[in-house]
Length: 195
Image (cartoon, rainbow, N blue to C red; front, side, top):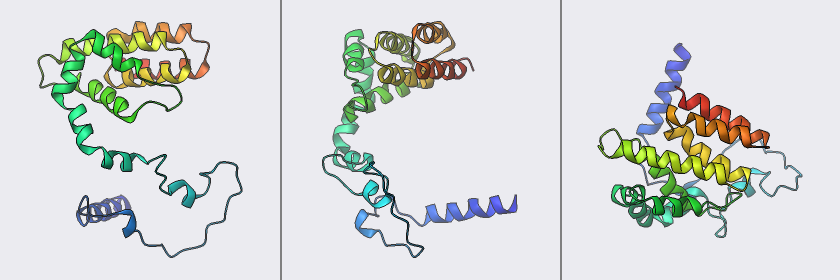
């Protein structure tokens, strides 16, 4: 227990000494330590240096978010997300923008996450109706998704915002899927929303 308290104190001290927004990639200093063995692997990201190198064609999440900060703030504002949640057509359009194999535009993914979050807002009197509409749309999108990736994407959102009332829809998705990963993930979602 003493060691855990010490670790916690050190983490807090480290967090307190860091001023958000002041560190950059250029500030990184090489660490003293053993030389890491190079891995021979067809995966171009198998070695740390290559995996963490900046690539303008494939920006890291923090690079993309920094470059699109104002656009993201506007697109995920309460007003913008409430407008989406207030329209079945807008919800359908947003969910239809999910692409297979991590091909979804990051702003679309952020809007979807923001919609899941806003639908659960306890300070908004419209949230319960929005949540019912949003969860039904997510379940329908998962049911109709043409591939396992998108089924699991929508199910993952239901994992966070779904309600016990959504369990039959999730169970039906699991029962109708030939993909073991989808069935397993749907079982996880069922456990989460049953709580």
